Image 1 (cartoon, rainbow, N blue to C red):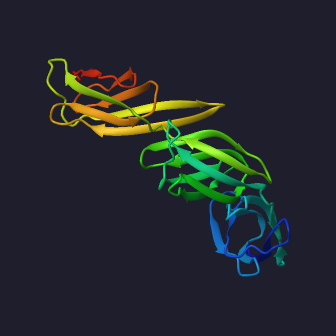
Image 2 (image 1 turned 90 degrees about the vertical axis):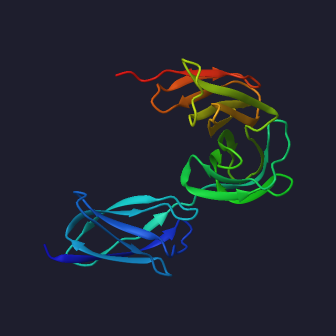
Image 3 (image 1 turned 30 degrees about the vertical axis):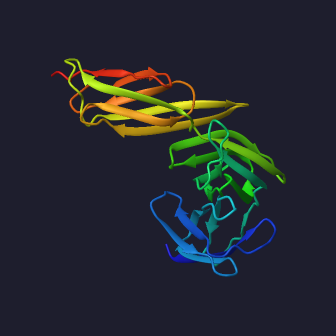
Length: 262
């Protein structure tokens, strides 16, 4: 088939041009695709075979992605693509530990379940606060990697409003100090120990946290700065069966691992 052309403009629902956005043209049988980037006026252009294709625009800035079927004809085909504007809101946020103490200098990623590709990176000030504008509405998801790997869910953002949100991380005054040994009582040196917990802070808000350590030469480990409540230890020792045990805060568990037998 002889190639033909397709061009168009990428604009928002308000008529504004969307520059520097990727646009993909995908064949109907999905055997090939090509891409381009919109110009300053939002214009894009492709050359392809006659027939049905799909224009794909990934999520970009505060705009959701779209897919649009287009039928290419022997003459130039004109296609204009409109990206609907997302409803947004403003956040006055605060990150605290389980005792309500502000966690200054904490970096986190914030997104909404309705627009997972649009992530904001925030850092709290000395008072534990951060501020964001034009955040897509919906269920909020806050993720941290330091001082712990955690995910906080359960807050809802309403369109057009300024919402004060307090994110509680699973950090507190508790600890778990334990030991990993074999059935013969020998220390399991260098065993990987993971502590997982789902901390519910009320009103549907939940903090899922994960911590990992490696046992020392005595098979010992200690998780510090824990919030209140039980959790789960997963122990992986070389040549041994994986052990999963439930533990309470401020306890001193001894986990016995069994050798793998052929």
